Image 1 (spheres, rainbow, N blue to C red):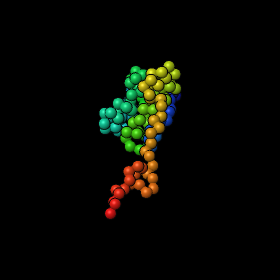
Image 2: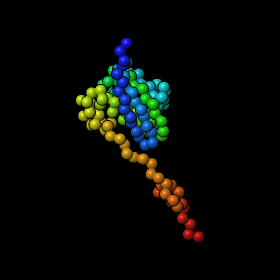
Image 3: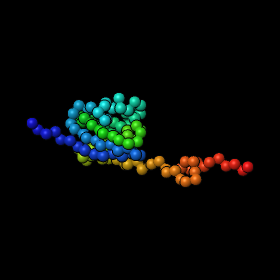
Image 4: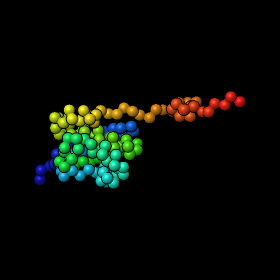
Length: 131
């Protein structure tokens, strides 16, 4: 029996990390052992997570298995999207221009700003009382 070729890539967004494996198949997308529709309840998260497959026209060519951890569902959807994009590049380097134009190959650097001492949050101050 011939071993199936798997393409692996890692995606990150905020504090989320997604490990993504692509295999030739029928287009099934699994995230943490569940269907993508079940794991991401909002349709915007589902669309964002599978955007690389739709843009390259390969949603019916590959099965995706992703393991995510950390952060919330929005960050995890972004991490899965970056992981799928990077894995698709291993399959076919010609997809790079399409994915890059859509901004799917760039790791989003925006993180939560840390809380500073003497303040209520990162920038918000405690209410000032003159008397």
